[in-house]
Amino acid sequence: MSALRVPAGTRLSLAAGEWASHLGLPGATPLEVRTVAVQGVADPPAPVGMLWVRGHLPECSGPGACARSWCVRVTVRLDVLYDAVAGGPDQAVVHTPAPGR
Image: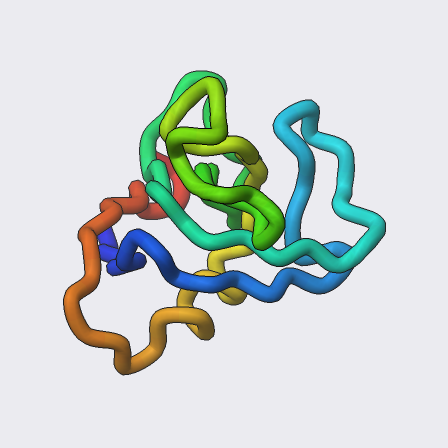
């Protein structure tokens, strides 16, 4: 099992193909997300090589403006998440199961 640390508030600048919608549709346009939480284990599970990310869009005025503590839920490729947090301090821990488990 490996650990990925993604702090809340991390800004993800996602290119087309680096994310998928909550319905599993591949992202066809760029997307900016400020993270609230990254889920290593979720129901339904994220596709292989991706994790669920809950967050806010840049135009969102914050948690008080949303029906939940987040306004967008997408899956994001693991390599993109690792690149986003490389070397960053104060990171929350997300555990991702090893392949085949």
